[in-house]
Image 1 (spheres, rainbow, N blue to C red):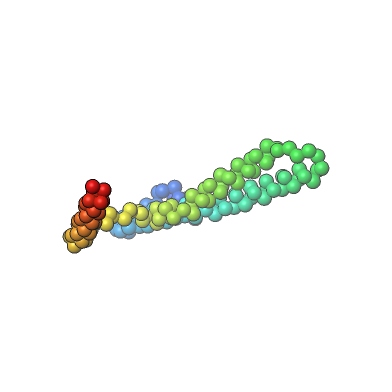
Image 2 (tube, one colour; image 1 turned 90 degrees about the vertical axis):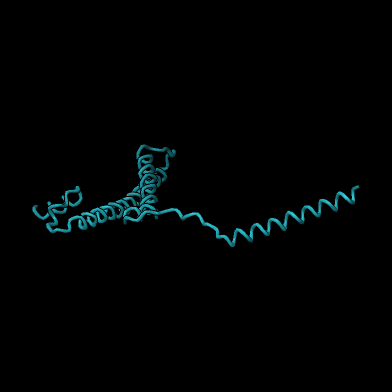
Length: 148
């Protein structure tokens, strides 16, 4: 039973007793990341198993209803199995999300900085816009001369 205490203290959050060295800050960060990764892995595997079990039990209860030859009725067990499957599939989808893994590994997804254009790009853009306006003005003048 004594060998379970360090593992239990690791998952509860009291990991100071595991490491007795001066670099406790580094080891605490490592423990936090390992705990987060372990939690995501366990939730992924657990939700996968529960969704498979729920789906198989749901199919088995439907097959049992159809084998009886009686009228098909939705039972409470079917609803529980279906709800278990849907909830575990939702947890599985969340735990397989890229953001969840990045958060567990300690990386934060930063949005891309807005692209800043340089002075040369601004000058070219102004020249192009000036040329377009000049062409539109000439077109308008030609239309006015033809109409007038």
